[in-house]
Image (cartoon, rainbow, N blue to C red; front, side):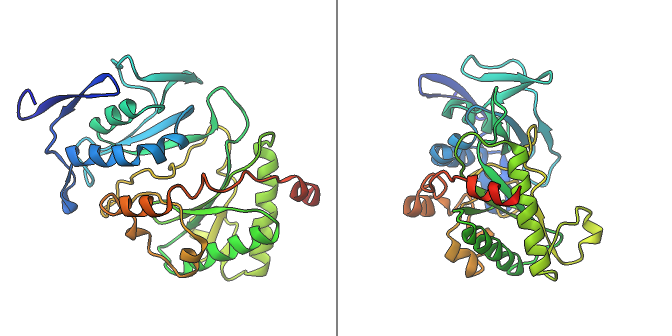
Length: 294
């Protein structure tokens, strides 16, 4: 360390700066910037595959959780030589493709990482995502609803992985084979949402306006679109419990697991035990389902 507030460290042959290592980012949990970067090193092998070669949006909290924040799409200047970017619609997005880039962003107090649904330079969805959005915090009712969606997908011959958003919702990730379009996936999502809403009208809704949902749970199949982004698997979230967006076992969903269990202070044990549940799921063919919903 060159002084109390700034230090230089080397990662993969690149020199990085750590400024204000003692700055509290999650004050209530005692997570300062230096500890946060240590946790990012742990998360990197799991987080980077879902951010690499995608257009990245970060959410930065210069003074930590509870302070002012801003979304950053355009890469800040100047950039280190190891940070790669990709331009779309006049915006120079960061390509989060390496540990040095992740730690550089962490030093800038980027606490959340939201990649695009498509890869840089491509038009196909990288995977299929359903966003299960409660209008209120409805635990464990939310998990009950997610379990019903999982059962419906399974009945269609589709393997999927639920993950906590790290906030109030849950996303369901379906790895898919190449060749599908966003429009095709939206058709399947619309069919699924309509089926579940008709079968469980007191549980589900397709109403986009929050005020009209009541306590029903919204199945958002529209948000999964080109140019949109969502919290990555394994991203930290700027919430009071320092939650991490975490893939789940379906048994955990049925048991009503609490997403707050998965946070920066506890995530290592889970990763050591289960690894990446999404990567272990085969890429799905949706051809038969598409033939049915046409």
